[in-house]
Amino acid sequence: MSTVEQSLNQLQGDLAQAMKAKDKVRVASLRHMRTALQKLVTSGADNVSQGDVIGAYRTLVKQRRDAAEAYQAAGRT
Image (cartoon, rainbow, N blue to C red; front, side):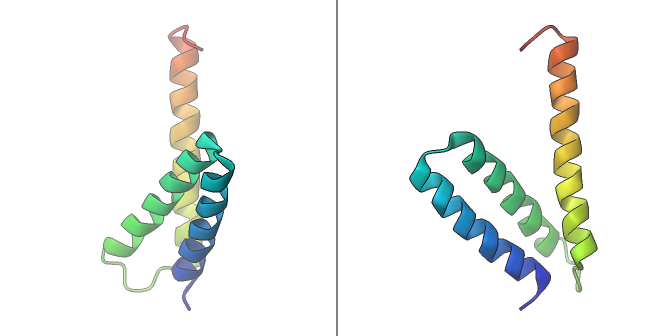
């Protein structure tokens, strides 16, 4: 089983637990992570490494931080 398949399986299990717990923030975060991995797989990359998976996660973190900074700069909370 590849790194991406393992990660997707883990995310699916975590997502099910979060949905049962009705944790909306965690559900949304896990869905974003799952989507990022699925895009990585469908991008046509033949051999997706663990570094690629971590890079996809880092991109998500950066996007969220940038959005938070933009909201703070605009005076929103």
